[in-house]
Length: 381
Image (cartoon, rainbow, N blue to C red; front, side, top):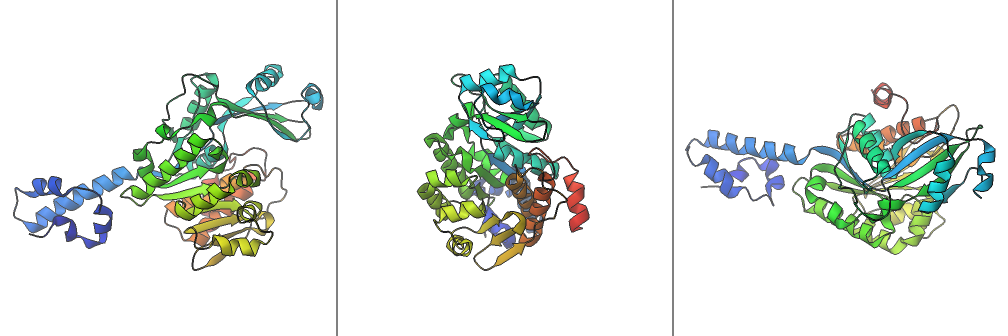
């Protein structure tokens, strides 16, 4: 008798690697009716696949709490930080500055966290993997990211360094100075990556900022291997995050892109840094074929979506006034990945990314303020 999994050829590729043969045969053994038997097999299969695709996107990144506080320019006099700068600080420096600040708004942040917030705002279902300590800021991060509809189940670190935070100090003229303490975010290990969570997603999205620690590199590879080993075809995406980050890890990033990454996100400077060229078109030629899709953002020039067979140009969304470009790449990724996981064509998904980036640069902050779901529906129809 023919194995029942071949009774519906359209789904047979997804069943390969799922050893259901004995279970399904036992379930169907009591009937000789081939139609009834096939119905049982198909029903069980669909239930399993639906269970394994609980998420549109699972994000992996630096779990940071953004503390946003209004200050006077004179506040910086004792800190040594130039106005408008981004500064990496240690715990003592962070605590010293934090103690002098007035009360402010505390929200979950980090690059991948911002992307997951954008996906949730569009109506997508997501989960997040990142490391916080079992302290007050860890509680803030966990509560906030869950409150926007993103699952976050990574266990707290119970010892070692505190939860990371970014002190965002806003000046009277709306300029921002930032002091970032990475903290526990740097302690993510492969043990924090649950293959079942990865395989429950259509796409896993990884933040290049997290790539400095060796354990984080191993966690990235584990996530990618789990995605590609799973039965549901989970795609692996990576944001290069920063040209200096690319410079530190160029060889490892090139290997990751060529062997593990399906969807790459980078801006113009980052992709040229990756392939050590000053020519954007040369970088496009280099990345072509090394991953399934490369989404390359170019600021006011829009973006280019590169595949093995095509190069698609997507215009930027014009805005009345650019206020703050922080988070533009994070939200472009959110828009594109949301569209991609909904089955939209690449150009339409890229347009969704442009709309999200346009919204975010029209105000301060890295999270959407407008009803972006309605905005995309109105713009794209």
